[in-house]
Length: 488
Image 1 (cartoon, rainbow, N blue to C red):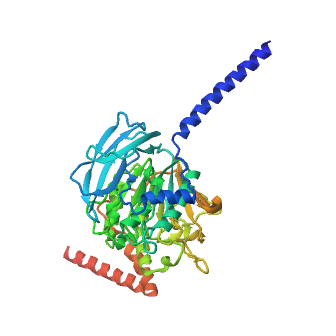
Image 2: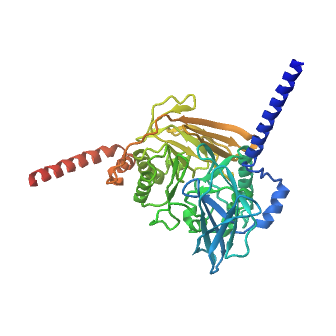
């Protein structure tokens, strides 16, 4: 009898535990993204409803994980853009947020609103309007924990309407990549796009194609300015970036920064020849986030890239300048695009490979910066007769396949996993572990001239003649010091 009672008790306990686990799993499932997968017929039917529609709302990260930025195009209208947010699809007890409008291309306006006060591990619903009527159908956004998080890393979405006038082909590939990545990683917090969101930088139709996937209504995308974006001026009308540099000499848009948990993302504009702005941006972002445990740079040009762009003179110029900036401010990681050819560098410091044991694809407290070059998210990958074997590349993957990366930050690790969409094959994985989260103090009285950026640039372009520059510089400095001593 006692044995029977013990058995019943054990079964009851097991049932209760299972029930609790089931409830936890169910609650967790509510914070996962749905499966956006479509058949070709379903995509075509959906495409007919969004083709050429550049008024689709776009989400971008806020200043930190408690905020969300939204923007959308509309006809010109004298009204205040508004977004209401609730924790239920019925939009009961919704909170109202007001924004502002600016003039855009195509006789339209851009409407921007920032939502604040978001709480982690909460599914929100939002609706937007100009004025207090014609509210959109509610869409959802999941505010996740920022202690550990994932982000989808892509580059060169580059939807083009040049050939088919609609962007259908590139949008279809982009949608397939996005849906596959999110099906495998439904806990993704946001997307990182390393530039060239469109082909011409001047087409509303191309932006409509880039924004067309359903998942774009639910996930914010942090974008960078690429050389194709720089061909036009539409980029700045389709983003609502936080902490934008107020004064910029670029016609395309402004660089910016945002924080997610303990990770600081600084988004540079490598198409802007005024590189002093980039130095000032890094300094300002880091001074405002001294307690951040990770520093990540985002930009378009692949300064330690995989293919032929890495051999271009303009790229060597950027390499000299931006490697000096990233070294000075001790960035842990840099994500870029431009090459349409995936690769991962060795850790680089002072324009040289850091001596580490890379064989295990895991390093601890490394010096220098790890550079990741993305493939094209719409499949416009470059395939050469022979792969480029740049000295700074630790791993590269050259293929016409759709390729994406999922990056994950935990309190003390960074991990990247890169996949081919077809066959869902793992191509590359790499981990950085940190036990030391201290950085050097910044001297705010210094500027870009106080780095060795110029020396890095000249040493490449002058080659063997660089030694002449060094000697002449030393002589000039000696003479100037002598004059100061005599006068003083």
